[in-house]
Image 1 (cartoon, rainbow, N blue to C red):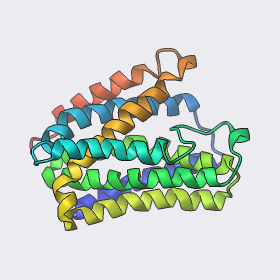
Image 2 (cartoon, helix red, strand yellow):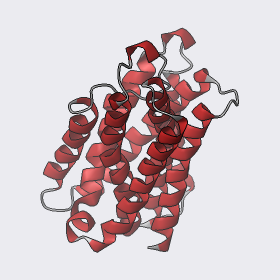
Image 3 (cartoon, helix red, strand yellow):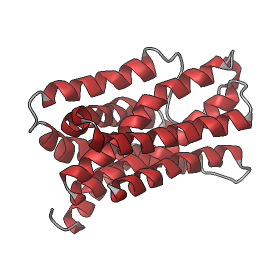
Image 4 (tube, rainbow, N blue to C red):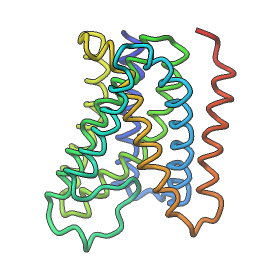
Length: 241
């Protein structure tokens, strides 16, 4: 339980780090951020399909839970939320109200909660799976923080509100990790639901985002393959169990 919480706190901290990159005047490489999105997508997709999915399907009704997790992210991020994408928001003229930033926060809160559920569920299944899932979650947290804070600022919200928003999604991750072992439904189906969430984020959010970065040539789309390779290397290096 302690390791679940610590890893969830670390993952939430990556959200805050991503938000800080937008607010602080420090220079940041948009090319590297785009590569990180693609790399994280490849790693997440490999973890979800090769590690999370087989374990999740052991539970009766696991297939349905995977589908529910997938559709839940689509509902909150791209049906109820009028504007959201991973990466820094550069179209401030399109942000007509502060409510756009609020909707982005609403869309990310369930996703962030299930990031915590994924970490906790994976550690309940075994330490090796826990490390792999934590790594997958952590990799997309920086772009997630960048996305939320930049949308908040572009839609006219103050830096203080943007900071509170990114801290909220970090906290949602911690809450997800804490409550998972205490709720029978999440303890049983948390990994399956999280597998669906992870597949959506990787395949429907991050990979299409990386495909739009054509100005960087092969560097960004190639990051997807490097993410998959990294998954195999880390899985090979981790002890069994």
